[in-house]
Image (cartoon, rainbow, N blue to C red):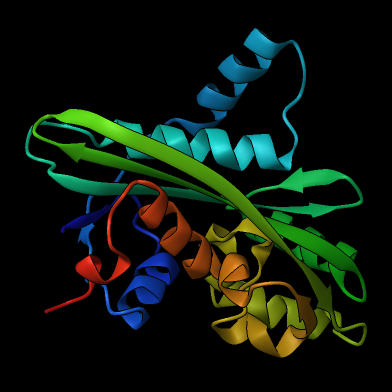
Amino acid sequence: MRLYLASTSPARLALLRAAGIEPVVVPSAVDEPAALARAEQERGAVLDADATVSLLARAKAHAVLNPEVDGLVLGGDSAFVLDGVVHGKPHQPERARERWRAQRGRTGRLHSGHWLIDHRGGRIVAQAGAVTSATVTFAADIDDAEIDAYVATGEPLEVAGAFTIDGRGAGFITAIEGDPSTVIGMSVPTLRSLVRSLGVDWTALWNR
């Protein structure tokens, strides 16, 4: 069974490879701000973190469907919540610096959305989604010089919450409660549960 990853995230790709799965990477071109704006307009309310990551994970998975895609398609998205505010990727260095000044010494929650589609024979056979979350606590003694140095690496610019636990950012994290792979961007145990819920053997995805 082939797994298609609708993401260019190096972290999600690394998680799958570590689990013995070599996916076909199919970049998903979803206009995330537009998708969220449409959903909020339709619902008449601002989406919370779980709804945000679920909607975007689903949109990414559906965006790559075409007749040549034959197998399971996985979309994912992550968001970080601090003081009730949902944060995605900072993109800009100054925004990343602001995030770090606000979150050092604090505890927030990282939410990861997963959407899995069984697309075989040119049609959607079944699909399922799930959201997982984990709390992350940051060191209180991170100084501005360390923040500047970290931002200068570029690592925090394109990740939810402006931090990683599988890279340079790991040294600034003092505690995680929950599944660490959720914080990286995709809960591997949750993915296994989704695969099984679609009637597919998890081991069928392993490299042979």
